[in-house]
Length: 451
Image (cartoon, rainbow, N blue to C red; front, side):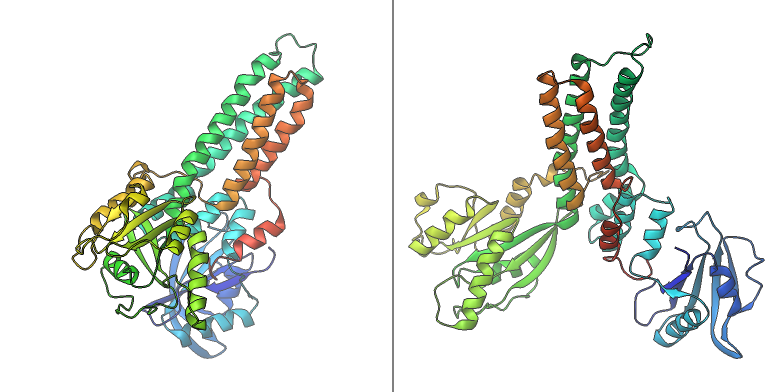
């Protein structure tokens, strides 16, 4: 934290402008030492200054330099942003000059990490910075903005605040039993407080499933035998010819992917190799990948041909998808039916003809219904969406439920106080009120340089 760090904050390639960000105690003085123009150490904070970046007597580039003095900056350190002409040569030369004059190249996410460590943002808000950069849909953007604003953090802060009140009351009862004006915490008084905490955690977790859906999208695999129309369905959903379509069985030997936005939710669609017994080693690898993807998917679109009978191997595969969210897609309904529809028991069936463009909208509507997408709050989405945070909250829920049972069993309250405090500390790991250095390093290394 004592070093002054720098990095290119804009994407690589040719553009009108590139921005190089500098943060640290010596940020202004270092930039000033290579700047020809006003004395940056004397200019007002949050001003833009015209001049040149120089290396001794050589002018490197004509620039605009923004000077922002601590603590009113993103990192709460002195921050300087150098706006250079876009492109590789000028940008990299300015960066090189900064490194030769006392700066250190920032690690991935180090600017955001400093903002967190300096108390500018909490851990959920730090995660949201990367979420907004990665957002591909408008609802992802809105959810990330709510997380940056602290709305998501308040879900955890309110829980921890109520737990502090419970812990404080128990401690006063234990340490100062002679105080007449202090409410005596009995098991009867404690039980509704603990039950309320449990119910609120359950509600946050329930809503968080929507958060993961918004952030990660729905991983969807199209599964079936060769020549059932998997690649054609992918092309129809994407409305482009992305996958190769032929009448030759086994054309698709590796996965083909594409994305569509369905009512604001990203659908990550994967066309897989047709599943069948084969002696071809390359095709066999593709079949193995298909089976693995089927297990890993959030949604399986299991395709059957209307004009083919069900085989034993397909019946066996159908039993494997029963434990997942799935839809059975009966393709080629424009042809005579040979499929034993009664065997399928009408479960989650969508009938289509990709060739005749029949049923594609019905399929989309069925997916919306299956994932309750219409019930997701699209206007003001405030959800936890990080797997780590959700896992912590699930563990806390189990422990709160154990405490609730202990209160019902009339265990002494002083024995429960330490358990409640331990849960309070665990919840703090979600927003960074309590944290481990190793966890921070693991998180921030996923960020891009300059962020």
